[in-house]
Length: 139
Image (cartoon, rainbow, N blue to C red; front, side, top):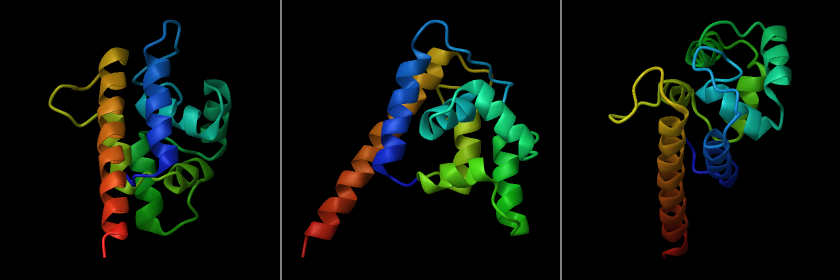
């Protein structure tokens, strides 16, 4: 993940949202899973709109497979995947987010575990962003 302000804010907002009751979180649903939740936040759309958009773009299967398919084939990047890339997501990040690659979080995660993972990722991106700015400012 690139340490962009937008992505850091999106991770934090999504983590906050996942801690609320009544959130439609489903690990096996593209619009309501980890990637879907972050996409809703970054693209300012609800789950229904995201599901329609993913369906229209024939994004089938997992987020990481769709991201890799676009990168490997050189075909036009689908607008949802492309928009997330514009906010700082990179190809490997889709699998990391989809499965929350972390020793503390496994498949079929709880909302609380995913929220904690997103906060840790945002913290790490914030540290990287500060370090990059410091390096740029140092002669």
